[in-house]
Length: 379
Image (cartoon, rainbow, N blue to C red; front, side, top):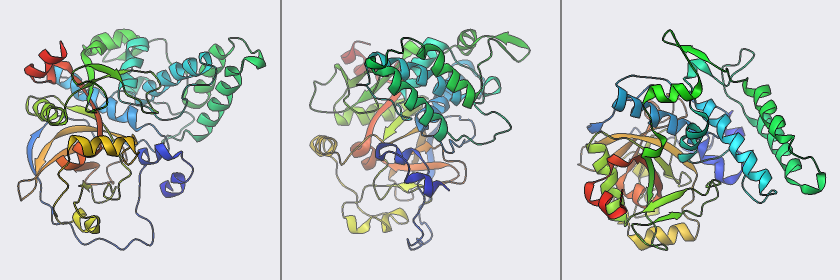
């Protein structure tokens, strides 16, 4: 089913859906990779975004769940769909007030749930599933079509529809995802979405996004020009080596990260669960099961790939640890949202070279940065 869905999606959203091998693709030999954990964070079970372009919400929800464990010592399954709902409300307002010149799609970025939490609070999944009428799987195609049609009509000033969108957009969300309770019970106590945010001890202001691009000054905030950054959020820019060093520092000091990645490479498979960047493209398939030399990625290579659209913003996951293979090569263990049957029990292992070239950005707690970097960024 997901292979059929793939052809219905906008190009920049395709990797956010489960990418399966094509029927005529020869079956790969058994993988020879053996991974040993180096550092890992506690996580909740792998989930499945199903037929929704919401990897950004699933990855950040998982990240925030791990943050709650780190900060509070409690496992809380968060509602991904409450973040989705909040983002649609904010995206609709932005699109309409900008008279249709902004972006309105299913896609988003890791900072979107953080923005949503700061405005609307958050809910546990037990308080809001986004599923109605006995549904067990998310399917947002009809909902998005209706939302898109609605916001386009309201964004056209000549239609003279006024501000009725403030009622129409929530009504559509209620129709497909269910209404949000004014209050709910959790562990025998009553909460609102905002009081539950306070209960988790999460502070949205503590989370930052770092990246590495040489067309803007390093160690300064800037608005990254990618389509999904509809909210014009600022990123903190680091040299590539320092970007990678801070990802590693965070993991080694107990902080996980939410990752924005290019998932369009032929070596980004869903079933093998190992993703590398071969130096010779003739090894694109072989490297999925047996290590072959990888590209030595420089800052300029990364920049060139971004500016000529060889690297695009396509998929988001949760970095939960570091592992190494039997030859000592390091990989980032990434919790995916395509269900436990995809990849390696729902996880993908991305090489350092792949992250250096294709990792757009990471969201993390600001205390996860190295002290020297925090000083440079005045954090």
